[in-house]
Length: 249
Image 1 (tube, rainbow, N blue to C red):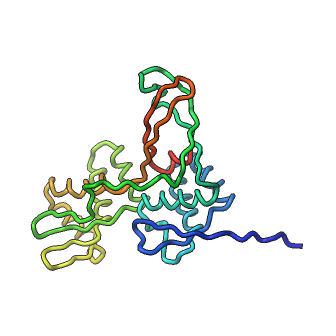
Image 2 (tube, rainbow, N blue to C red; image 1 turned 90 degrees about the vertical axis):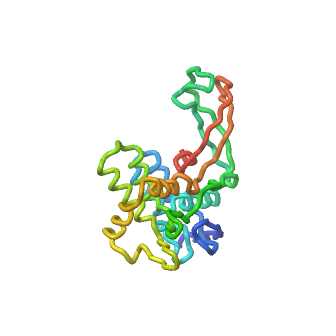
Image 3 (cartoon, rainbow, N blue to C red; image 1 turned 30 degrees about the vertical axis):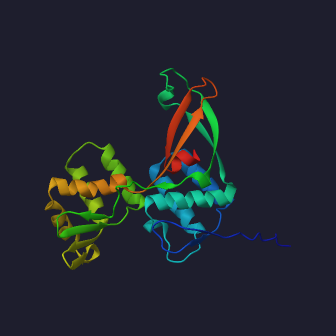
């Protein structure tokens, strides 16, 4: 006799970069195990690959691929899937940065705190825009970096300034250019070679290139501020949770 088949419920969610609501299912026990193993392993590539794999498994809508989602939507999708899988309440273990409380005293204690995943929102900077005006006649329309591109940016910021880092930064910026507008003309970046785009970026002034970099610094982010009191030293702390690792580990 065959074992019974358990029907998996389906839900809908909305993401900033996708026009229509997306259908999805909760992740399965085996998928949750894969995610926790990747998080505990700490290898960035494993975390990225596992996150995309689980989201692609759970999203039921056609034409939605985790490879193409911007980082903040990928993170939000994973949190929504998690909330329907194991519940909206999330227990965190919070510690003082560098084992020093806000009074400057040593304390290595980890305190428990519960938050609701439904309270976590994507934060958008008031000054953020995808339309970058370079001159009175030329405007660049940007698109958000995928998770892979975002982590390339992180590696660039953490590396020393050298020719290789600058070249990689140019590459990420070029990958995130969608259209270039000059007067009434529209130039779709996908119609041009990397060399064409590289020559265009190289022709910008430093101030103009800084405007493009500001797009990445102000783009939407999954950030949640929490206030908690240490169960040992009783010191009150404020902490910003940022990224999947903070919400799952």
